[in-house]
Image (cartoon, rainbow, N blue to C red; front, side, top):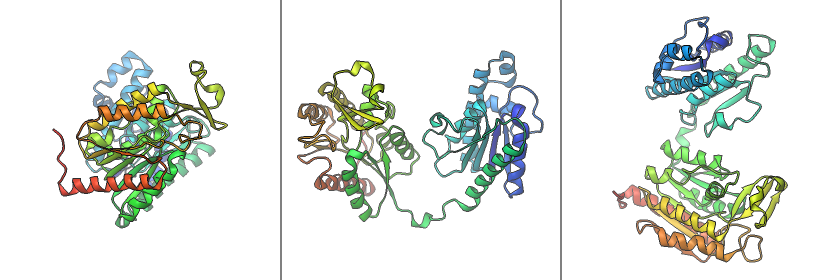
Length: 412
């Protein structure tokens, strides 16, 4: 197995050679991948640029002739991603190291995001002190700010690159599955501040049944991260209490998890219990960031940087249709559990977002649209009532057991 070192050697050759030498001195095998386009590399890589661009369905000669930097970067990212994924599937990758500016970061992290959580990934980048979400996505990528531009080896770059390389060495040599024997089957759950009592009570019940519960904050990336683990095959059951990200995607809030939210468990046949936690709200930043088109709507200032907007009956009707449709398409055991007494801490009698008609639109649409293959449970409780939380946990345990025992037959 080897560390895959990704760099554009035409501009970052000296830096890549330095990192390679640090890693090999620590006893690791290094596979250097060259994603450069311009000048010849200062040393011979293990995987050359021609191989990279062939993996992307094009050629180095064509891209060099076209002289389109953006197109070249896109192709290099595609090619490196394909090659690294293949190497990993062949059991040849124990870690990935990348270095570069905007181009190098785009290319190397594209490959890193193809690898599952737990594979060591370190990216030294000139962009690491800014907005890193496009590069990290939902993977455990460690980004290190280069401080200076990566333009030669000097007293700063030597220390930063050396520290980052040795960090990767430490991950590989001293990380890994040291506690694998203590691992339990995994259940994932989604939570927001306004659904915390429910998820905490459910978590305690599931842990008592012998499961490890991974809780994800439903802030857009949280939902995406959870579903990526489901797709990676690491999850035995999903307690999707807090589907609030669907509201942000529909209405235009800042915490959307994208249009594919609430699909992973269904597509992968993983048992799931779905609820409607925090679908009474859409998230925005400070009040002055709320779009003008929402003037006159019902708002609640959660804190100085978070403004919540109440969803309307019309929006909840659409959300109900989406939940029912996605749940009905599931290949595995699925239940929807509805808290008729309110869907969040601020959706209750006397609370700022109490609006029974809006909630009823959500519940009615789900009831009318959901397939008979999906178990629909309605409880008069508020979502944060202990009774509701335990019922949701118990139902998920029953669905998991049904799949294990073969009592559940996947729909054709």
